Image 1 (cartoon, rainbow, N blue to C red):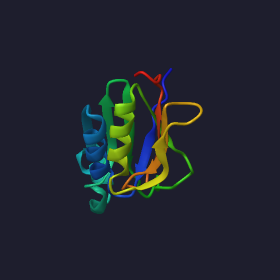
Image 2: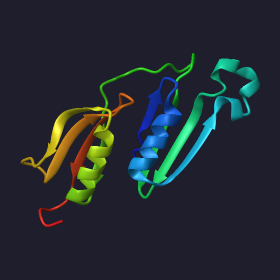
Image 3: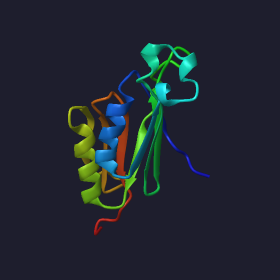
Length: 137
C-alpha cells in the first residue's frame, strides 16, 4: 500500500506541477478539462484548468488538479512530507521549495533526524522536508 498526496489548486496547477517537476524530476502528465471526454459538459472558462496532474519521480507519485464548482479548493492544515536519503538532497529540495515561498521552520539538525524543515511553497502548499539519513550520508 502506498500513500500518494493529491493537491488541490485554484487555477495554477499547471504552473505548480511544472515547478514540482523541476524540483523532483520525473515524468509529468497533465490533462485539462478541455482535453477530457467531458469537455462539452464543462463551462468554457474551465477548459484550461487542470483536471488531473500526475508527477512520477522514482517512488514519488504526486497528483493534483485545479478545483472547480463541484470540487472547490480548500485548505485543511495538511503538510506533504518528503523524506530524502541525503543531507545534500534535503538541502536542495528545501531550497527549491522555499524559493518564492515562506520558510516556517529552517532546515536544520534536530534531535530526531539530521535535517528537518517546514516550508510553504510559492503556490501556498505546505511541505515538510525530512532527511531520513545517518550523519555520514
